[in-house]
Image (cartoon, each protein chain N blue to C red):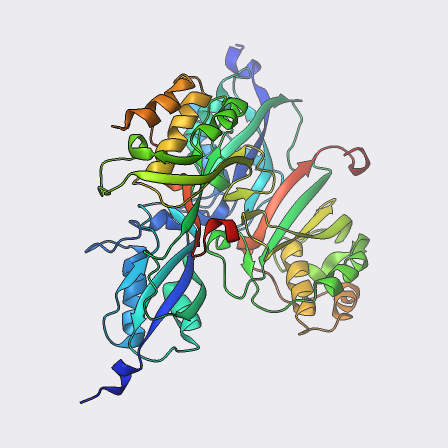
Length: 264
Length: 264
């Protein structure tokens, strides 16, 4: 017997933004408030049945997203008002920017061609109250010129095993960074926030804690605790990571791209 | 008998910045967490005696400050490390930007010559998670050109009794707005926050809720709920205020000036 609703199911692709401060990260965990958990609970309530959500990237506890992408199967035809209903259920910390029907086999995770991460530092002597949730406070004088000069060393294709943290082990640790740049201003910063600086990383994929390990290592070099050659040596070492891991709350997943990088 | 410490007292002038979200406003109140209360408690602990703090302006619950100014008598000579000690005691939501010795008769409140307030609106269809604490979410299409055209009507010296809320009654309700301007961007906004707009008010002094009443009224005109002439009529009416009061969390005291405005 054909069940009409099942036959008329579809695949959803959503783009969400969140302030990760008060979440235990992306991945659902029993008894914890997580982004995936909140999304799945809201979608299950609307669908009246369980919904499995897949994210383009798992963000750790405290990490934010300007544009995380998720996909899921939906047990009915595409509902035009779903984005609005979902956004309302999720409350002020998670906003559904976009929700569309995707090809049936679309996977937010496996179809992602590249991602952009932003890491924000507050270089003021004392932490700015308006950056406390979104910036790593670094109260040291950093040699930003030196840090910027070193960025080409990590651009391009490399084995980044030296910059991963223990966690999910990947078959290959080869990754390509299309660009790594340093800018004034933060993911979120006050009007007069001249002390805010950010590193932007655009790459095909990222190993566990790779952005935070690269950022923390660049910061240690910028403040002259590590010599500049440490960056290349750590890259060449193949691990384990011996640098400094920047804290989670400065990091944000900015965008996920599903087109090849040269067409962006 | 001369008490050495008392004879060697001084007047302090401090500039502080705060995220007002989790405070019941500036003014000390029993059993409530307030900015003045936290400052006085921290200073009293350092001084080992009560300290009375005066603020340039009282901010309401939820209102922020980029640069509030306070003054107080200090029962000892000026302590060079006090700014640092005080900032540490106050925690991440309040930051002491500057602390200096002022002339003995300096009053943060009575010597203020002018103040600048910033009011931030998030005009996106749904509230941006990164603006939830700092912007009034206005999900309507606003005629920003019309709002900007009307700003000259409230510039200059006027009796602003029509835009005050019941509260502290002032002897005179004449106030001068040196400038009122509309800008893209917010007090605090994310990198891609194109939906954020702010009104900036620079004036000699402000009546109770005057900025929020002016902002809410301009918003109602911008969304075509009130006719444009409402602004002038309300100004001419002398009160009571019949417009819309914008919520507290979009407002910030940006700066306090102690010089005449033409020298700023």
